[in-house]
Length: 178
Image (cartoon, rainbow, N blue to C red; front, side, top):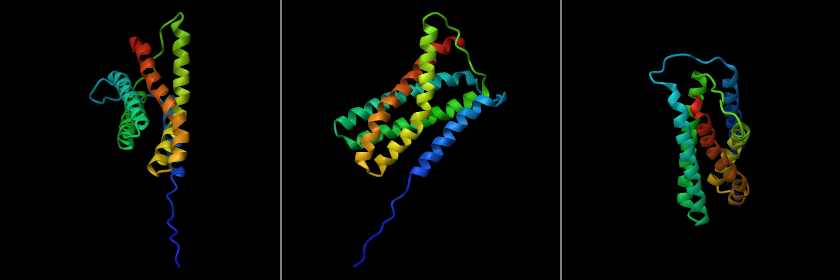
């Protein structure tokens, strides 16, 4: 009698590695001087593109949530892939902008200033947290570890929705100062 010992792919090192790499690149961009080179277009359009991509991510996540609540796994997966695609495109645009342009300071005052900084700080912290959460949730879903996927998705979905929505809010609040 032979027993099949199919070895399961270990996605955890990939999740950890990608999470560290993505977050490290973002942090490094805070400390390196801007590239100041010509790219053939005005990089000041990239924050608007980032907000649009965050909006798409938010809508795709809401659609994915709706689909899974309706038990439509096929469309849930499609919307999750769409959310990952728009998030990936956002990341490329975000990294490009922050590598080539100086940081923009918020110029508002009064009650909006602490609101802006609260939204910005929570957005930044949770954006770093959502990277490994989203990747781990995706990996568990793709490997059909449904119970583990559900447990972590209960945290990932609202946090990712918050990060994508606050990304748009940060843009709307700081856009007059670009």
